[in-house]
Image (tube, rainbow, N blue to C red; front, top):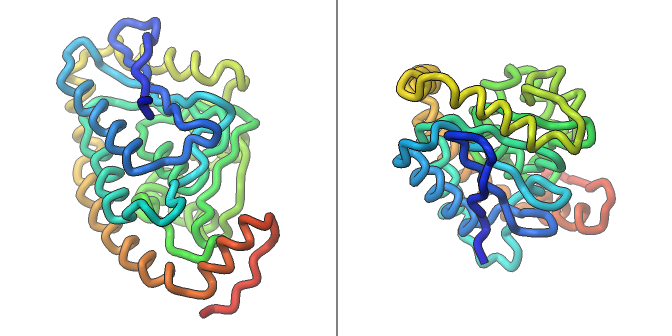
Length: 250
């Protein structure tokens, strides 16, 4: 079974990719590798000018799947960093929760279309460890350093209306219109000259992939330190028990 399905978008020159890892669509190493592979193949397809990333079910992506300790975080982030080196615009259709790595995945797209019922959270500090997925670079670039710091330090969840206010998303629509609206935006982009769009995108994102990779190396180093702390173990327990964590700074 594939983690990323390529579907008929119903629009000329627009590709529709759908995350299929129900019920929470957690990001795994295999899912990120497949997503990067598909985006790179779309880059080589002249009939595609823009892509939309959506998800099946009620959740966009509820975070990284490190269940059982079988997944190597370093390898996970190697695949995640590939997403920043693709050439064509990507629109994220965020109809449900985008948490942790799911937020990182949404922010990796060029644009985000969402709804009031969606939930966004950079919950890493609430779990007792350093943010990842390059969010230390991408989130301030998108919402500004002050709002990014607020989201990262608190790990708070915000809805679609607040996300629109701070610039985390670009369009707020009815929940049942998220995918259709994301496809319409992608079609609008695809109506522009493709060589001009990709070159303009490359200019606007010049140096971004290198900067994200560099900061992600630091993020991984910090995460490895924090994984060994009592605070991290407490954060994970608290999340599983659906309670506030009791951190001790050790």
